[in-house]
Length: 462
Image (cartoon, rainbow, N blue to C red; front, top):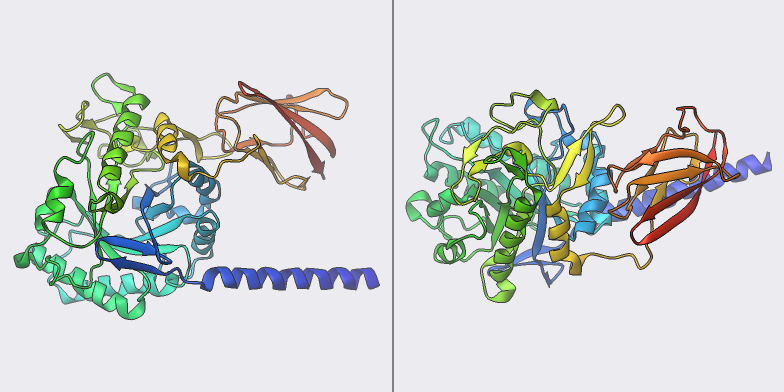
């Protein structure tokens, strides 16, 4: 009886400590300020090394109501983004309700030193002269801000992405006046985070125009501009052109290249990596700390999106290779929307979201490696360990050249050979090579790679 009461007491104490740590995590708002052309986080100059993040498993489609935070794939993604050397993820939407999964996503980002540019999607086919439309967009945006403004992972808010007014009779002046109203009213809710708006590079000429109400005075409540740019190996005259139009910070909110070569009808990871590294180098040359106007950029995008092709001939479960738009700034002018990820996705009978790095991930990591926290020892993470009444265990942070994992029992007999397709996320379903479940006990795993051999043990408890 005494032992049972002591056990219950320990559980209660543990829960209270956990609850206190959780509360302290989610209430310490990060201080983000715009000073001239610079962005400061907790009084330190901040340069964005970002990844556009909208992970969609094979077979799913956000256009039909899928929301990525409900699958919790971010739990495996965020450590990989950290290992890339990124410090920001840019998301295009957020829940307007107190969603526990999204809260966990923000917690996971913050624990890994990742900040979040929280976006709000605006349908550009609306008439922005309509008062009902304007009030709805303002209220929805403020709902998101009110919900998540106190979380320390939040870096800034982005109202809209590539909005092009005109299809419903509204003008750029109507759109930018709405942006000013949204920013002004949002600052009454949250004074701690900047507000930006993301536009296409082709609409750069709409910035700084008094007639469009997009000059710095008319848009006094907008803190910085974000521009999505796909212009080949570099950004041409973008940075010079921008500095003539606005004194606000500039973020390259999307840059990148697809990995499908439409000329030769094959994937070309080297081509993609070459463009992405060259684009980042151009951003780097034009950073404010180097005397330029840029505050960093976000590579588009984290994973391939099998749902996104305009033709979508293979549906959401196949990767379409048709050309979605033409861009003469690239050697291969055929842009393929389903191939822009720096991570591949695939599926099997157990999992519809299996990711593996492309060449672009590895090459960008080399550029950002000075920001990566490198383990001194060559560690492989295995969890849960001990594996107590669970379906599988996961191997993570395997060496890149790992091909197989060998599982042995305590007698030294080979139990299971696991083929590695994802060095961040390889599972053992606690079975042997005949598909039979293993019994409780101590097991050993061996990994051979060019750097040597890694060995360790796993406890299985059923």
